[in-house]
Amino acid sequence: MSSATQPPPTPPATPPTTSPPTARSAPAGARSPLPPARRRLVLGVLVFSQLLIWLDGNILSTAFETLSDPVRGLGATPGQLQWATGAYTLAFAGLMFTGGALGDRFGHRNTLLAGMALFGAASVLAAYAAGPAELIAARAVMGAGAALIVPATMAVVSWTFEPAERPAAFGMLSSFAGVGLAAGPILAGALLAAFWWGSVFLVNVPVVLLGLGFVARYVPNFRSPRVRPLDPAGLLLSTGGLGLLAYGLIRAGQDASFAHPGVWGSTAAGVALIGAFVITELRIAHPSFDPRLLAQRRFAAGNLTLMLVFLSLTSGSFYLAFYLQGARHYSAFEAALLGLPAALGVVVGSPIAVRLARRTSVRLVSSVSLAVAALAMAAPALFGATTPIAGYAAVMLVQGTAIGMVIAPVTAAVLGSLPLERSGAGSAVNSTLRQTGSVLGIAAGGTITSIVYRRAIDGSLTGLPDEVRLQARVSAELARHAAAATHDAGLARAADTAFFHAMHVGALWTAGFALAGAVLLAVGFRPDRHRPAPGAE
Image (cartoon, rainbow, N blue to C red; front, top):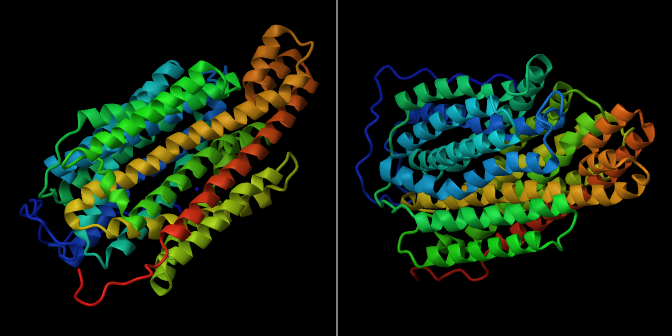
């Protein structure tokens, strides 16, 4: 953001039963019905299954440069690349709470199996997409599969481990996320060097096939004693609201202005639909996405902080991919290797944070770590064409370690604060807000850099043919392609200068988002001033 994935532990001699526990309302302190060895086995299987999500997390960003090439890829514009990422995260976020409700109704193992199968089938469709529109559609289906996988995984962890063990279990999931975050881009870079761009999605298929077998064999089919009804109204309002909001932001980048009616009209309509969604959910006795949980100060602060963390990460990933492969001319594989320190940092930072939080507090460890991550995210504002690449790697190591020290303890704190019967609802809120941050991050990061780039390069396009000028205004990648075709070295230099300026501005915005999360965490996780007297309710 490490090497090979560890195989699941050897199963016990006695075949474990996969029958669901008796439907009952379990208190938060209830022990897991599984023995310790079985709990470790289940966690190993979940880690492997979750690898799907992390493998795909930044595979697409590795392929951005190739996909934008009209010869080697699909000739995708920045807006289409934003939608290829945004469609995935939009479906992920919009369907997340539905995935949690389905897990409560049909069992979390069954939901996990369905999500993995859907994800694998959509990966094949993405690999053979004939154009940007087909790729965007396949990515949306992949997001729907992920929306079934993640809440089920989080809920199974909550059911499998007793409260004292959950922070370490969630920390283990976060640590091994670095395996996928590191392996995904490296595999993508190697595949892009040898095969066509669609091969980067086929890497998901063997993981799906192995994961389906492991999950079906070893993971119990936990069910919530309180079955939440499906919520079609909430699904339409939330997905529609996020979709319109993302469309407005991305359209602003394409138009280089927020003044167009299609921009501010879509943005306003998206905000209105999200507000209607919250009101609708508040009126339902047992909503799939329960806004009432956000009335708890720490739960709300932790989840909103994670939303800002993922917003910052996806915002930065958009311009950093083009910095390495476009402005610095590294291959996709070399760019993936340069991202390895960030992934290793996540692996190292997560367990360290869990141990430090036990000795001090989640508030101290995570708020300080997120402030450090914000500084690392601001560092690209100083990068240029001749910046030593070792400095880039060092910044990524610091950023990855700091992010790992935020995600693991904060996730454990917010999910561990809920009783078992609310684990599905809590994981749905947690995962939905994370993906909402990703949707807004890819929209904001791409839009900010697109607007700044277009305004920066306009002055250098005077006197050029209309076709070249229109192409150069779209993106630095297309400007370089036009410069190569017309043998115009001045246009290539202007594109690089405009891109660096856009990246510098984008980095400062990204750091600001992360810093806001650090402040929110420090305020929201502050100790209660007045503790109730013994025996008081």
